[in-house]
Amino acid sequence: MFRKMSFESRRLTDARVMRAMAHPTRIDLMELVAREGELTATEAGERLGLTPANCSFHLRQLAKHGFVEEGAPRPGRARPWRIGSVRHSWDETGADAETDAAAQALTSVILDRDIARLHEWIAGRREVDPAWREAAFLGESLMYLTPQELAALGEAIIERVLAYSDRIDPERRPDGAVPVQFLTAGFPLPPTPTGN
Image 1 (cartoon, rainbow, N blue to C red):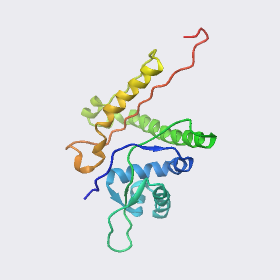
Image 2: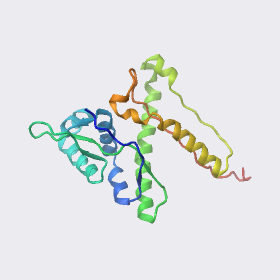
Image 3: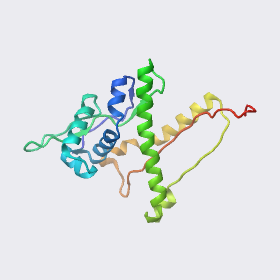
């Protein structure tokens, strides 16, 4: 049985915690554990093409900071893991330069991964079920907004996306639901030489 989990956002403010998460293997492991419910380092290694020892090391590092936790006991020496927190947020500028660097590193690892996935989707979309090709979207827009308008727009988008976040729990997924990557960003551009 999948453990009842909280979908509250966990605010990351400690540079050590951000650095612990800012590793591609750890991001992959967190997602895999969240998607599967519970799995051992051996099972994770099989799915990710990594050694059980490597997965075990990274899972223990994630556990030190509450990103994963020990799952239900299994017979023998098997040590299953389950997700500890599913939503995270952090500021790009923190209390000091160390926190700023950790936040930037974490953002870069996640953004690099997400952009790589987008490129993979674009390259392979012809092989995907037509219903999913029609449903998927990619948009880009140039707008002129105030800081307050940008913040409000971001909050509205995130609120709509979060309406589906409880589906990380397999028992809450409707038939036919598959994992979908959703990436949003809104940020000011530098002005042109004429100030526009």
